[in-house]
Length: 290
Image 1 (cartoon, helix red, strand yellow):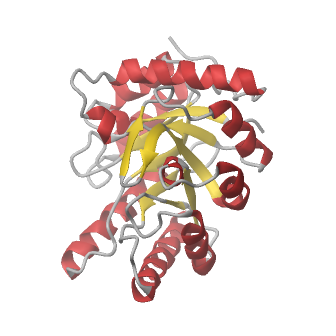
Image 2 (cartoon, helix red, strand yellow):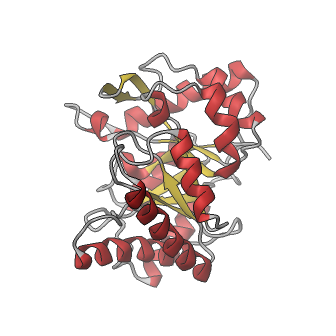
């Protein structure tokens, strides 16, 4: 099975979902990651069944795969009521994922672990406990939760991510493989990809410059990351899911930011890299409806 090139609605969270889908399809991508949140165009807590059916129909009509929904919640906050609300947001995204299930099953739900890099053993145990609970909720709905590593958080390095996934030990808790966070920590892709790719159910991809704390995330092609070397690493490690471009808030905060322009530019960069590397992305799932 070939990898599929996708684009994340994280780049345009307030745009109507129908327009998000149309933009991603027009740029030539084969998959879309939806983005859920309390203030996003897609709010998992309030979306009706008819609205969910309409989204599923639009995704299918556009010939896109729907591998994931990004919906973050901080399960380490000290306040009990707030922590319960954060968890409720993620669980609502799981419920939505189950409603949006297509021929490939429901999309996974991507969320972060939070915490800080200096987290002690007790804090790391709380992360494990939180994802054990999310895994149980996912199992009840048939939805996988995908942990996203993040620079500046407790799961910032490959070994820390792997340790938590092994401790949770659930098929319903896997990895959203966003390698950009490892890159700005100075990690070597040839070392971390073989270890982590077997855990991955989804990936994010962007460009980056510098090493934490002096770093910035970029649009693919703006930095010097070698996608033509990275894509075969993923494929060679057995990964066959979506490779999804994510546009960071750093880029979104630029004057004149245009999600359609960065989507088109990112597609061109990744398409060139795939051709140069001999990697073939899966085409759109079917002919798009007019």
